[in-house]
Length: 314
Image (cartoon, rainbow, N blue to C red; front, side, top):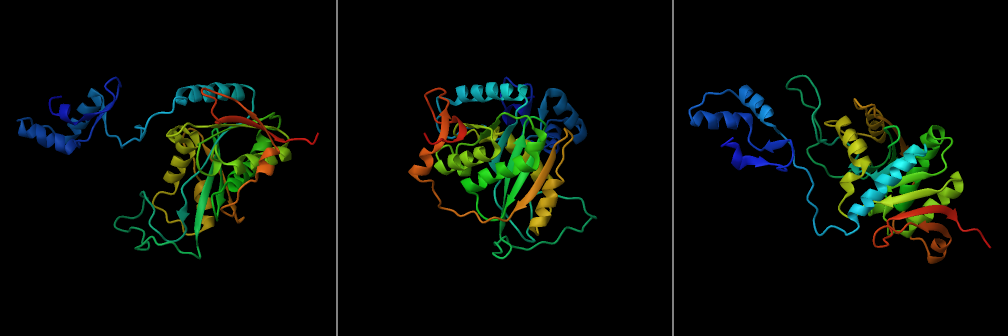
């Protein structure tokens, strides 16, 4: 305990603490104090005392927390429970970072014969002919399933809504035939930003198509790590393709589609070759046609709303 005091991290109220010292280092430090203890014994002692090896975790928010942070989380939690109890779909959406297509090194390791590493290119410069892919994920909280719309151009608001549309027609419609609404949780920025009119106008068009309203809740600034698609879907996809070069769109589709977990996660992936143009904006006239019901939480923010479609002509 004396040695660990200067190398201990974690919340002091937590059951689990962790140290940045390796078991070999601790064994050597104990030897300096006259104790001959092997690394395996040190490892067992650490576990018994409540320590473990852990990676850095992004828990410290940069800047001041938004005053509506807690009340928004409470609203999302309460609404989610009601939606799930009613048998309606609750989905978490976001776009994973773009990946270069080609014979490039990919983070992680894979099992291969000893001293036979996979050979890949010695640089990561983008091959313009092969391009990039933008995996837009939809995680379904109801049944622990994932859907990925694999874009090949740009991550735009049109692409974001197209991904929800693709999920609905590919999986959602058959899984939730009696759904009376869809509840969506997402970040407050990016292609599904709470401030972008195009996202709302595209959602209105989708509602007109499917005939049921879509309710949206955006996470407060600096809290995207609580978005379930991040740690329930994207983290597992990263494990699935760890150490494997993403040499083609087809390869990415296969690797994402093969993603599973011991808790039963199943993932469907399909490519989206549509060309989504950047810089497009919804006009004032288009936005005024959106039938939107605002749900004011906290200081009357714009993080919660229901899209009912397009306003009917009077």
